[in-house]
Amino acid sequence: MSAPGVTTGQVWDWLGEVADPEIPVISVVDLGIVREVAFDGDTCVVTITPTYSGCPAMGVIADAVKDALQAHGLQDVRIASRLSPAWTTDWMSEAGKAALTSYGIAPPAQQVIDISGLHAGIRRRPAPVVACPHCGSSHTQPTSEFGSTPCKALYKCLDCREPFDYFKCH
Image 1 (cartoon, rainbow, N blue to C red):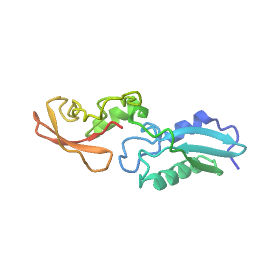
Image 2 (cartoon, rainbow, N blue to C red):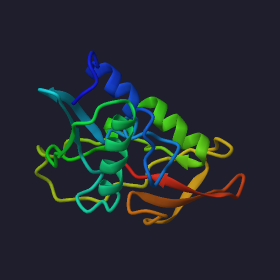
Image 3 (cartoon, rainbow, N blue to C red):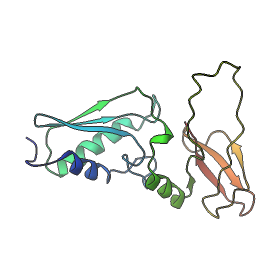
Image 4 (cartoon, one colour):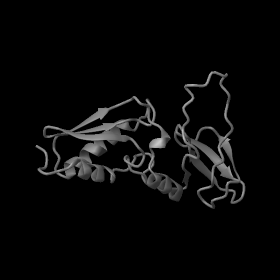
């Protein structure tokens, strides 16, 4: 049975308190994983999209979403997964990007572009200019395409000399 009078807006607010298990300073809403909230009768249906198709955290995220909503009185909760359209860093909120920066992770430095109309050969694009989350300098360089998780790269700041993760644009 669902809590009477609960709105989808309230559910969105509650989900905004559910932290991503890999980056606990950003919520699953601010990360853009939660795509839709709806009611099917008394059942609250939350649609989520993984940051990539093999994301090992999706089971943990689904459980955390259910637990959070049940703690607010919604007993009938169903999690639906949606793979298309694929998640993109464009779905991250500005508040989420700010939270990443304050945590020491540089947020995506550019938007995803639609390359479907390109007919020329595939070209590797240059590394984006990434501001250091510690000192704000843009005098940084990538040190590894792979960081602490598959969605991040490792950078270093040439001014403050600190290494940091960069949340790759995808």
